[in-house]
Length: 109
Image 1: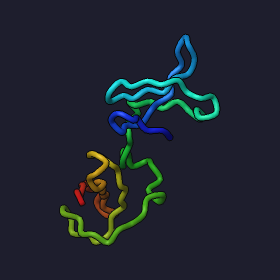
Image 2: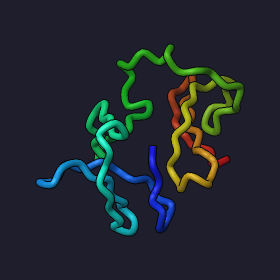
Image 3: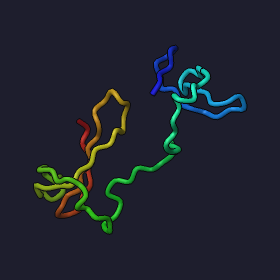
């Protein structure tokens, strides 16, 4: 991974007519990429939706269980997952789903 010398942002690879370049999405900085420094394993889709507890048909056993009280029914167990919903310097958001009633809520750390 390489960072922009101007603003510190991540440099992303991009194919152009002149060859592979690295560019910064923040400030627009560009530089020619060395062939050995760019290895693209998979294309990243920035519009990918993150699914959190979307349906009852999902296998909920893949989620860890926390000892928290459900605000709806008072049960003391809930499945949880964590996602980075705010900027990277903020703590992640924890999403809970009650094991008993299925109520979903979030907690900002």
